[in-house]
Image (cartoon, rainbow, N blue to C red; front, side):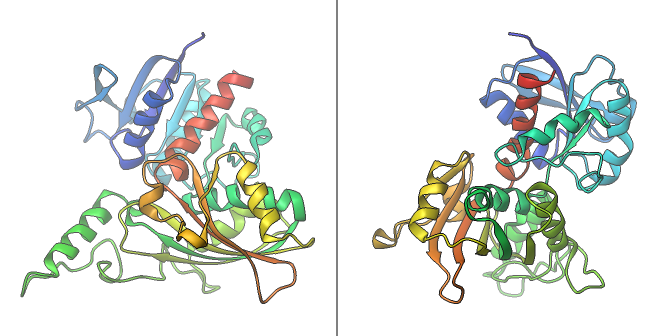
Length: 338
């Protein structure tokens, strides 16, 4: 089997560490592995399989001879270094938001639009969608193929891991200190305390009243699945460490019963249906954490709409919502293109 030289940019972050774990789990055919991060992290070591690898400075790294770059260093950093890597012949799979809406850069979820990967030849870059978009379009794809989705209304319940390690630490400390009289941890990563609270505010507010996170779901769903689908999102941060949940209402052109939808979803790649009201069986973030699948529960017909469905969708936002999706793209790349 041919092996490939791989670079992981942002290797020391939450998603970078998850990428390394998934590369190991899936036995990705690696010849040489380069771990890249900021100058501050350069010189530290990280373990991969049975080896200790030294983290290198991304700003000084020469990408010549690297086949695939898995990038998750932040949008501003990717905007500078992904084109440098691509110009050296490295195909970049970028997990940041910077290239997602570039018409020349494919935005890919392998279970939904793997054919778009071929467009990597435009700029040498493939973009990974937003975590909340990924799990939603995985669940929407079989419904759209069967009945053509017209409109989606979605409310997200997003874990703090989506905002990074500091956000997870903030939730932990605020939760712990809630029970210590006179002790309080003021919010830094969030606009209000996140412990025992929910915040309908992820990313910046825009002039139209939506947040950037919400408009990502609109624009990315239309680019990946169908530009005719109308999406109305509300993105909410909840005091959960890991695993995003979404309550999704779907309106279709053709009527689809709950039983038909359940059958289609059960047969779709990347989906695990976990739905039995009689036994109180449904997915929660804890069920999804550490798992590759997108879990679909509470599949039912919308009582307010003749051609409507409702469902509850849960996924590990660091795995399928970021790292796993990037590695799956790389797997298609080496299987079909490189």
